[in-house]
Length: 409
Ligand code: PSV
Ligand code: MN
Image 1 (cartoon, protein in one colour):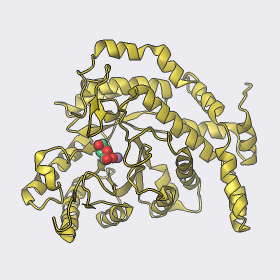
Image 2 (cartoon, rainbow, N blue to C red):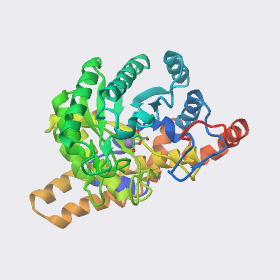
Image 3 (cartoon, protein in one colour):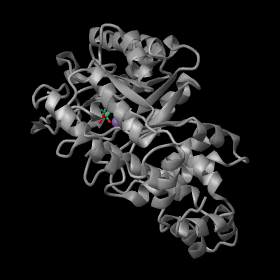
Image 4 (cartoon, rainbow, N blue to C red):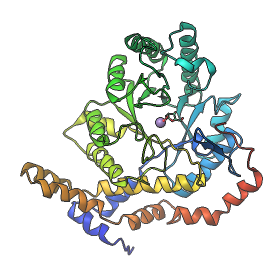
C-alpha cells in the first residue's frame, strides 16, 4: 500500500520506529467522554440552551455512540450522579453496550444540594457528612452495577473566610469519610481523587493541590490514585512535572482534559496550549515504554484518559470531535520523539539538543498519520467532515428542540 505521510515517515525513521508500530499505538488510544459534555451548560451568568441537547441519559449515550462511530477511540462515557440517575442502571448499561459504549467513571455530585453550602465530607455537621458518605457509597454500588472500575471524586469543599472553620479538623473529616468509602470498594475498583486550587470556595479548598490528593491516596491504599484536571492549577504550574512525579510513585490515576486561558474555563483541550498537552503526553508515552521503571510503566498503562469540558457557545458533538483530534495529535507527536537522541543529549548535558529532540517531534505534521490510523480502523479520514455528512446535527435539532435538554440549570 502506498502512503503519503510526509514528514512523519522521516521522523519515525529518526526515532527508530516504523509505521506499523505507530499505527498500533494510535489505534490503542482511548479517551472517555463526559455525559455532561453533551448537555446544556453555562457559566454562573447564563446557561445557553442548544437545540439537540439530550433529554435523558439514554440520549447522551446515543450521542456518545454516534461520536464513537466517527472517532473510534471514545469507547466509554463518564456518568455524573444524580445528573444521570436512572431507575435501572443495569438497563442503562445494556443500552450502552448494545451501542458498543461502556459506562465509565462514576462521578458523585456533592455540590448541588442546599445542605452542602459549607461543604460535604468536610462539613462541620456530622449529619451532612453522613449524607455525603451515603451518596458516595451509593455511587460505589452504581459503579458495581454498571461494571465501572472507577469512582472519580471531586469535592467543592472549602471555606470562604479565614476563621470560618478549623482547617485541621476539616482534613481529619475528609480522611475519615474517604476511609469508609475506600473500604466499601470491591477489589479492582479505583478511587480517583481530584484536586482544584479554588472555586467554589475562595479562601481555602480542602483538596487544593496534588500534594493533598497524593497524601490522602497514600494513606488510603493502592486503589486510590490522583486525578489531574488540567484546569485546576495556578498559572505557570508545570503540570507535566506533576504527571512525571505521580508516575514514579504509581499514583497517577487519570486525567480530566480541558484547556483554559484564565481559570477553570473548561475549554476544548489543546485549544489554548497545545504545547503543554504535548509535553504531558511526552511524559506518559515515555513511561509507557520505560522497561527500566516498572512502577511508572504499569501506572502509565492504566491511566484513565477522560475529557471534562463544558461547551457553552459551540456545538457539542463537533467540539468533542475537535477535542479528541487534539488529544490524538498530542499523543501522536509524543510517540514520535527520538528518545535515544533525547537521552544522549541529556547524558552529554547538551541542553539545546535535548530541547530540539522534543521540538522535532512537536513540529511534525501528524495529521496524515492519524488519517491513516482511522482508515485502518475502518473510519473516515476526517471525523469533522464525517459528522457534517452524517446529518446527525439536523436530526437531533429536529427531534430535541431548544429548552428540552437536560443539564445544568
Ligand atoms: C469541577 O470543576 C470538575 O472539574 C469536577 O471534575 C466535576 O465533576 C466536573 O468539573 C463537572 O462539574
Ligand atoms: Mn474535573
